[in-house]
Length: 186
Image 1 (tube, helix red, strand yellow):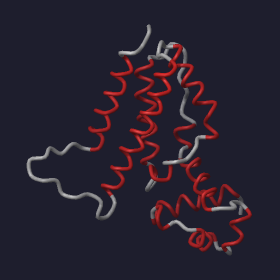
Image 2: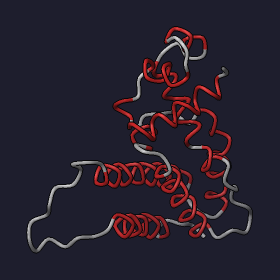
Image 3: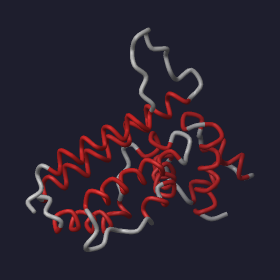
């Protein structure tokens, strides 16, 4: 048993039972080991959850980075949509991700920020937009995943328009990009 195996099995457990039911006891049973043997790889459940979040984000953190000449708007939209798709790949993906620190992704974040500023987006606005888009995406996916959970969605009163999760996400993302476009120097 190695660290990668533990994380892969923990993610499988997450998909089966949801974040609230993931425990080191259940994970040890799934792996066929005693619970204390997990502490060889992870001292705390928080460390395990952080490793799970990092692994779950791999589709996004390995996506192609922007290149010189790319349209910043198209890239920003695609990057944020890719983040959403990645969060939706796992049951409770947004909850797992929320509150984590992208320690292994800092170089990629710097490349993304440099791309935006080279495209004429003021640095402070680029930082704010990336943070806002990230938090908006996590919040949107939290709502979407809660809505699809058993007992998740309450019925809306008559006359209240229903907007699908993807349509609501796209509308909010467009507002972020449109607002940022008004601040571009070039």
